[in-house]
Length: 156
Image (cartoon, rainbow, N blue to C red; front, side, top):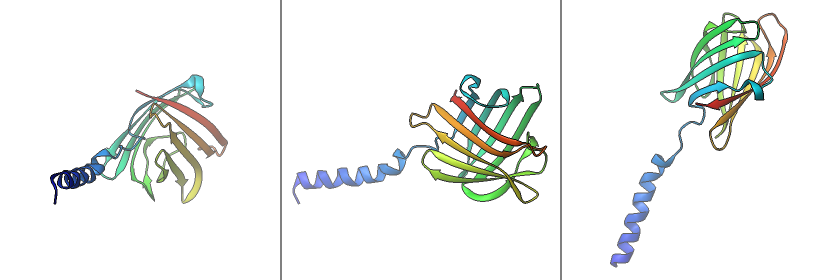
């Protein structure tokens, strides 16, 4: 084996070993602030913190509705579509569950349920540059009223 062939083989093995390190982290991770100017949303302010939690995420949200009602909730889920409880106060009422799935590298879907019934679907799309994410929510609120919102968040 020539020196050139040996060096090439070493380089290929080294690059192959580094490939897992080059994988980008979950684009949903970070602190996200609601951009009310770009949103069609019932909130006047809001922040979401999405942290890694094993092979899933922990989400903590703090929102203030246009009428001044403050909401704070948290949940932890894997991207496996299994229902997990949401704790705290949400605009969708007590006893809400969430199921998280990955659609593609920059898109996730959340299905919200209450008493086993689907009450909302949320699609979260993170921009290619990772600086913004758009959350589209369709379903019904705790009073059974229709919800159809688009919330744009800026990464902090």
